[in-house]
Length: 154
Image: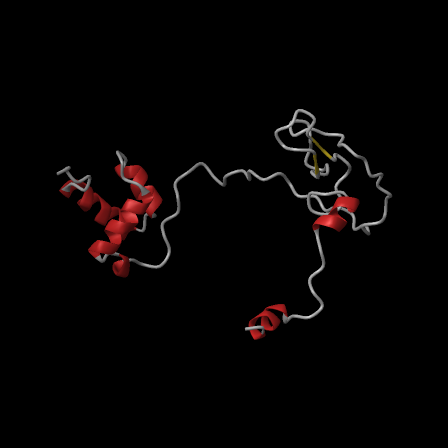
């Protein structure tokens, strides 16, 4: 039988930190050595501590607001799908390693083959150029009842 990671000292520290309003993640970092956020939440639940806690958790200590990891968003001009003619090619202009965020990712060939490429045309909708978006994105059915129709077949 293995010894529990929950010693009396850790349980006491857990109770103190939880009632102070610390988050489960903060408590797990404080207790360390194999105690995860999920383990903290499970122990809190089993001990019935979740009912005895005030509303909002304490603020995290830190130097200030974290910088956003997301790139700043930029709005793309609204263009109809057929704004620019797209030339259909039989093989792509980009590879898996060279394709960029604003290039069409429509595959040409078998993924394992040496001549596998991606379209590479400028993106117009989703991850595809206008030509490939017309193939990839189909409009929804006109009627909202196709599942009802299938259910009536039985």
